[in-house]
Image 1: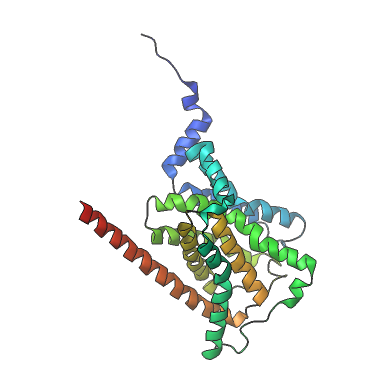
Image 2: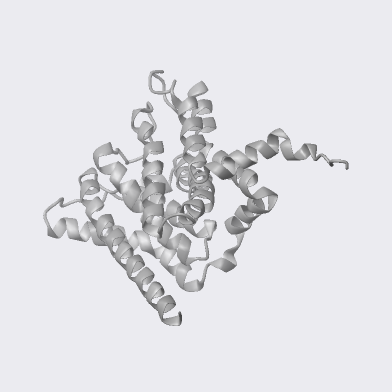
Length: 290
């Protein structure tokens, strides 16, 4: 009797793919954080702006980590079809209904204005906003803001929500998956506060004490949009970008940010309760069918 051998079964690619599948969903944060921190580690001590010279190269290469981790692991765990699926969900506008386009486009402006009004009424600050009119008349600054608002989030959303959230949600509830996703995303952002000049052309000056929780809470809002639009990467990308751009153009006062965390916490809590009730209702319906 002869034995047929299949060399490709034990190729480096097949062994790597098998390892990636076994390590799902934890392979993503290892690649995501490891790649970024490896390239970013020289920047804080350089003494020069992150936007110049070799620092910019280090920042951009490291900053590609969510896209790199997402696409690489999608290919290893699901092949070319899973990678193509990421691309389709990035450009397919049909996944987003007219109602959800309205929510996505209006949410952050309305939310920020409500928070500003509440801050004035409660005596947090009498100037919640310092509208950045000069940004609209300075092409270079506006272009920089648009890159920060939409290009960088595109890199993040493909990997973080488009690939990794789905893998987490296969194992955990939507709330737990969102919290893990957001907590890891917050850790990835932490070095930004020590990158020289990172926020030099913005009105944003974060402190980790409120910024880290804010990122986690924002993630739950992003997950809400993502799961409500048939896992549309485009929807969550636009939602993410408008959050950045609206805050910058309104010129949210530094005194507002710790207060804004409360508003995000309230919104996220409403979502968590609704998700929990939805799970209980689904479980009850399933039990009734049985």
